[in-house]
Image (tube, rainbow, N blue to C red):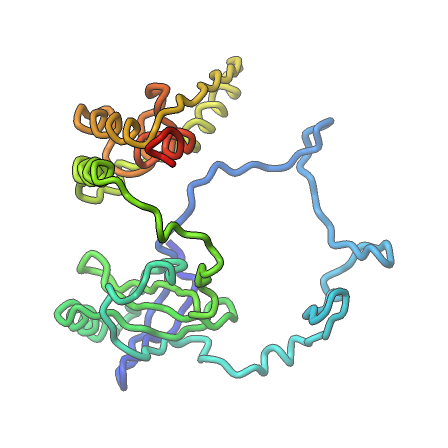
Length: 293
């Protein structure tokens, strides 16, 4: 791994020189856009539609649209003069309990590694956070952008930095319509609880696989080998009521036909299932019938 940032982690008057490494990496199947005639990769150029001319990097300015079609221009010098945190410092602000931080605030994970000579201070912070059961709320600037972050222990061996959204960047969801007055049938509630208990297990991230990525990789390999691609016909969802959907889901969970965890239903299941349906039924199944009204 290559470090993406070098700086210090400030813990009171203790300064720990550290390196920052990305802890996660998406494994998506990447596609290149090609010219359909000759299969050459497509290139994109920055273009001014008013002047009908291609633009070089030095001809492009940074603008903020304060009204439709009206901009104020900010120079690089003006942006750089905006006060912010030290570009090479993780500044710890507070220590809090991890369970008090809602996961909606988390953005991306990074490993923090001590630089030469900082091993003892790094270990001190790691062990003290473990003993206290606390994480640190910090401020840091990554790629010229100030962000909130949480500094925490990971697998009892590492210090990890999680970049976070600011409070005003997290939507409240007040405009959403949620079922506050829906009456719940006691039998349905018992079956739903039974289903949750039956599907409950320890979290083992390795057992969850991306079916979409696996299917794409299989298609690509078959294309490379010159094999014909035939799409499987879609199955029409069976319309059943909520009680029946719950009952069938519990039966399937107990017989082991549904893998533990949401979103890992085996492909090719019966007609009453669909990928991503946590209670074993489609939208039509869960909301139709007398019990779904």
